[in-house]
Length: 125
Image 1 (tube, rainbow, N blue to C red):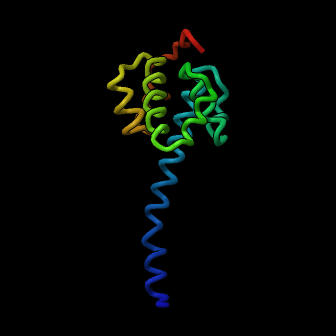
Image 2 (cartoon, rainbow, N blue to C red; image 1 turned 180 degrees about the horizontal axis):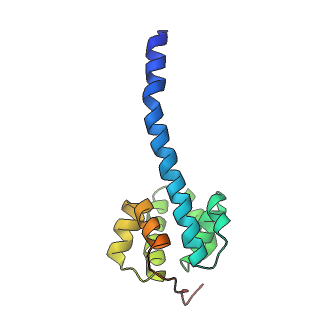
Image 3 (tube, one colour; image 1 turned 120 degrees about the vertical axis):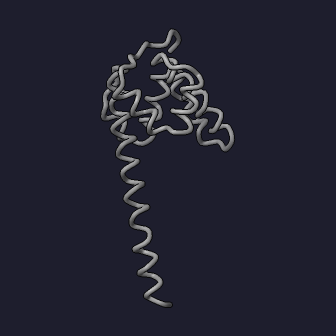
């Protein structure tokens, strides 16, 4: 084993790791603000699985539907449905929700959390 190659590979992975951590922190901060706007505790954004349960509840879906995210292919459909419902609860259109909550999710979360959009509780919870 060549130690030079191992050290180079480790050094090359550092920027990607830092970028991933920055994106994760931004997503947590944005979800925290979204949860607070919806009247949920902000700390729920930090707890794995519970944050998804809470996000489904905020979007007006049955919170237990988040378990469908564990099924391949179904998870993509459920993610899109969730994004459309979440966007609608903040007064956003379907196109806005698809592109900014599915495709560029962290940017969309930041806009919802820190923007002027207000949460409107869905009719069916």
